[in-house]
Image (tube, rainbow, N blue to C red; front, top):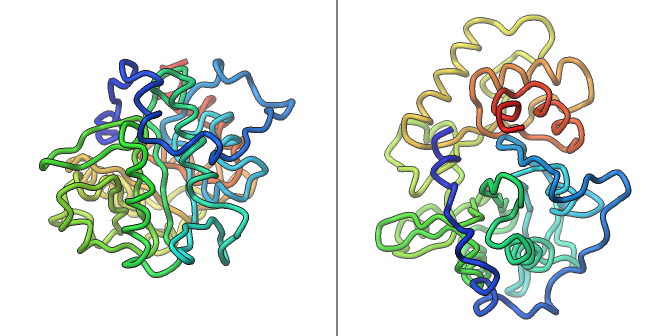
Length: 297
């Protein structure tokens, strides 16, 4: 998983003070509620390299539930309304902003853990920001919000990627032209399969995501067709050769055997990001069946 390893930043030395000066006042942060009874103690949670919380904001405790299950990636759908970024799937929720739901809590974790999001393993974290409103107007506002936390978010400047504890990747309605033209930015581009093997480098496009059902008919019932298995591995090899990661959405996600059959093939092909709404289900699977996680345990 080349890009994942690229993002393992030496952030421990940054410490708590680095976020403070540029961050928004603590009062703007969303309240951090106590963990549910079933949640493991934070220090004991193993970070899971492949675990991505799809529609994370729909959980009882957005971001926090994902972190308590060891996830290293979460997705926030955003809408720009009156110069503010609101969270929501079908429309903006005026009670929740990107800043209060994700940015300030991530900054708080960074401070508490001495420069990391996960205390154990210190894995980098991805915040996938899925823009639901018009992308050209939204992207500068996203950049403004991210730039308030310069020691938290990976940045591109001076022609280089400066790795930090969290990498923001823009999905949905994206403004690639503006992103490529920027000499400095705190966000990166989520590509599609048509971008794979093209001119966009990992410094612009660290992630390639697409709909599983557009490229594969197999839904985990019976053996995966050899032609589709070969296609999957070619996709992964092509991305990895360029330092990029691969994610599929619309894979089976109901708690049935076919879901785990698909997950096994994704892990065997070294797909970097496994998409789910079932945090506990993917956590159990990866701890039991992902060789990367078994080696890290």
